[in-house]
Image 1: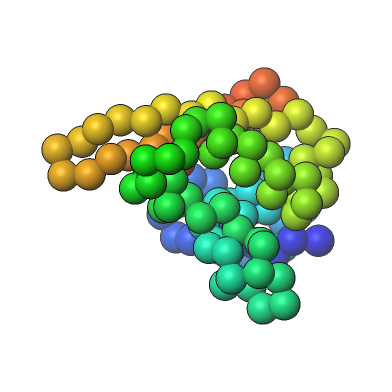
Image 2: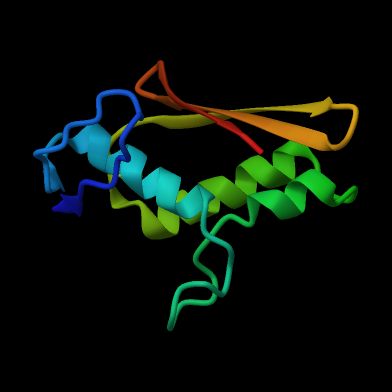
Length: 117
């Protein structure tokens, strides 16, 4: 069981749900939690989290390293990623005031989530 964590205004938001019942939705919640958690923020597990913002501003990282880091997190903390194929496509862009990272999360061959950091 996964808690329903969508906010008002998100696609397919349902105000009467308390838990996720579809496995793909559960997997996406697990991925989202990993991506937006910084290492050290989870009590008793200092390794949980993807530290995405660090990859935006650090010059020593590349897309292979970021993808490997996220995949390692999925193996360790998202059990449903073993059941469904999960691929991550990464693109970097220079904007006028900062660098940006675009992630496409592809589950079973379909883009399920896009992340802009």
